[in-house]
Length: 317
Image (cartoon, rainbow, N blue to C red):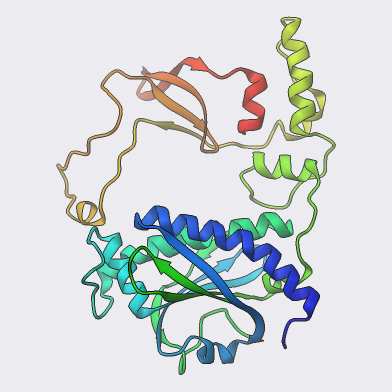
């Protein structure tokens, strides 16, 4: 069933931002300027997708959490081959005629990150949790194949895809189930409390109801700090028992897919930190401190040497 005028406006409002995020992610991963221009957005029966994306297409489906349905990214095989060639460290001028396992592996990482960025944007705009679980990526002839989890009425967005100096191609994204219904309803306002608690828990599960917000917490804490008292606003009590993931990062580096595939026992990976330099301590992937490695009994530990002020930690979490 075709979208009504107000539904189409709602979908365009959400996907305009979401697809921009996907475009930026593609550009970052491919190392090329990327432009996606949405040419059409509509609601169709899943069985009609083959009429929109004809021939062989790379199909990258994901399942959404909380029963929100499924999403799939569609890229014509010729365009996907250029992406795969770039992802394995080549220049894209001689893409493979057929996507072999190596190319599918390389492009899987790309599609997963692009879908995460698009779905993450949609999730925040419709105020619904949409954690993604990637399904098997494949190349399908859409005229005779179905996409796992994509059935019934779906919302499909088609776009013109320009990657650097290469010929213009096409890209599409399909939403099925409750995710499609949420797009039709349009952006939903999210309370400050929901946004704060959802962020601090890393986006998992349903947001808890509370009157806390980051601004009030920080303002209150700053007042206490001026009096030399290290206490937190009482409104934080409701989230004090929420578990947070603490990560100690020794260092980072970037490797080509080729380099990763060539790794074996005994390979040495050089990181971006100097020997003896403090390691970074992250909470929910946000930097909060630096420290030095120590040994406690038979376990490694970290002695904190520098940490951001408590009033600055809450927004980071």
